Image (cartoon, rainbow, N blue to C red; front, side):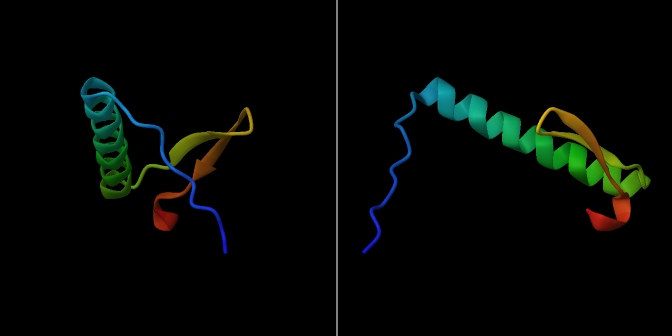
Length: 55
């Protein structure tokens, strides 16, 4: 049986900041897909382009 990993408890302000960051990321991803622009992300310290067709 695997041990469940608990998320650290966050203060309400931290939760709001986390939700705001996730919403902003979703918005950017949707806009890049709509405009057909690639999404540029950092993976292991290097920049990587994800084509809009893969979003």
